[in-house]
Length: 380
Image 1 (tube, rainbow, N blue to C red):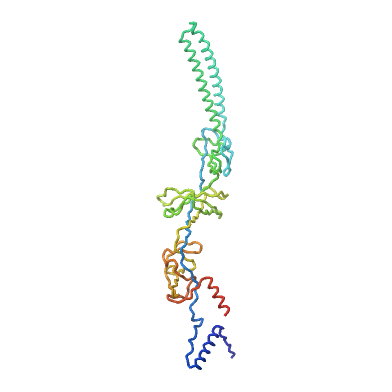
Image 2: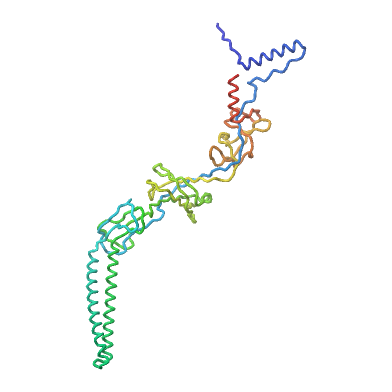
């Protein structure tokens, strides 16, 4: 049967030859030889290490809510009882301030205007006649042809006729103002969110016809839990995720001073950059990110997750390992905040630490040193 010779590894062969040479020297001199060096299999395992550091951790908060206009204008008719003749804009249209949105039928009002104009003309004629007679009888006063009472009566008639002219003109002006109000105009420029009127409807004061988002500005009313509201401040940046998958950058504009007594939620208004997918009434989710205070933190790779909870493998001054339970907090940029655990500066092992028991000795090296050790072992 053929037997295969297993050649010892170079490092082990060198160790054996050195040991045999030492024995030979000891036999010749009568002195005991040196103790055999520790073989690689007996050496302490090499462990990549890092330290617990103090660093600022970003605080993240996620809140959802509805998209709402920053400022909404509701437009309706100022006069009632008139038919809607034309609707000139549709939902989604951009309008400017003063633009015509709809027109009411002016037929009934124009008949009243014509009648008022005729009344004004009649009143003017009567006033001119009365003033002429009053001026004519003034000359009779000094001659004694007419009594003082008769002259005063003619003056009173002239004044009354002139007042009647003012009344009829005021009535005409009121009708002309109503005619101008038959044209429904946009009070502000912006985006038409809703059209609630159709041709043929009867206009009624106080009944909305259009809703306009001023300047097309849409914001997010994010609902934030009461206990997290203190971590948000005006001016904070937020990233808003839309149902379409798009993201929009925003800024906290204001925070409601009121907490809902039932839900214990407060509203945070986030102003958003213009985006075609922003629609009033839609749903969106915002994530806030703020740089918090300095806390103890460690690399995520150093955390070991056991059934009893997270822990770290610490390394003491004698290069011996000790598992220590910890309580973790927020995560940021590959680090985990330690709410409970070893102090800042403690040396801890990276990786799983499988096979290491409490009190085992290790050879701690930094991440860069580990590469050098690997290269040295390959050259042996």
